[in-house]
Length: 106
Image (cartoon, rainbow, N blue to C red):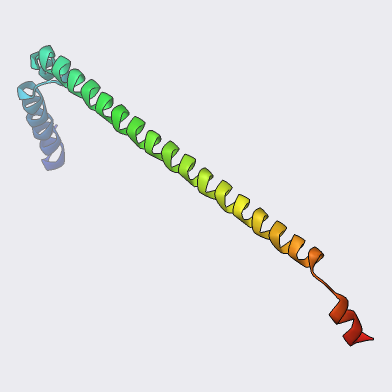
């Protein structure tokens, strides 16, 4: 029985793929060759970068707290000055002499 061209082509492709698989390194083989010491060094670098990030975050938070504190003082100062000015205007209006205005109206 003759299989012809298509079947022969499939068989040749299969043999070629098997030969390629023998020469290929598996992922686990590559990982076994990779030095574990390198992983420890990268872990230490990662931790150091995390520490540096934490320091920057703490400095940033401290600057934000100082800014908010200063902003709170400014707001309080503006409120106090506004109240004082309103009280001065209120007492000025109450203590003014209306006798000239009343005579003009009558």
